[in-house]
Length: 211
Image (cartoon, rainbow, N blue to C red):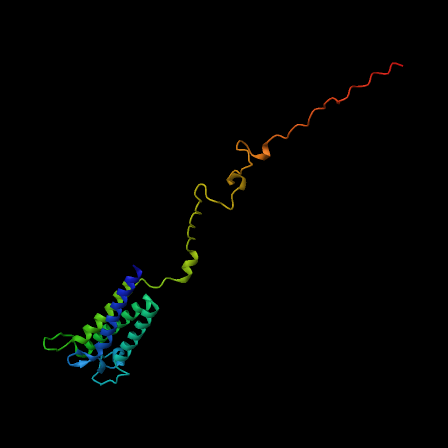
């Protein structure tokens, strides 16, 4: 079950990584793509500006870093890394929306591509996918948990069937009777033969001396 959950979570996280990396190349507000916004514009009080950004200083840079960290979390099976990257992506998306609303006065969604566009939705879906993957993944079990695991119950020692040879049993109890053994009782319990009684000598006794 844990293997299946890890596989499903990894697939969902990979889909989120693809959406996150693809989102800066999609239009975010009007026809302006995400890679055209400066990262520093997210921290300006007056909102985003119209300055054109390079790739290393655009929104692509933090989103690409979060995607790489997510891949590292998948290799390490770390739910924490995957979940944190999802929160970072959603935080960047919300922060951009706040700064864009400050610059434009309001946020709108137009039917002809005016206002919020598909790039914002793609980034938000990617961040939500990473959070979902972190919930589905079981994570890696700590190694020290095995030290507190109960010892497995050993299998009972199989008993030999009746009549089988047992090298640890009493030989006298399992030895088959031999041809010279008494079938009634063992040889060591038979009584010893009594010594023969004194027999009279074969010659007559001499007469007693009367002198």
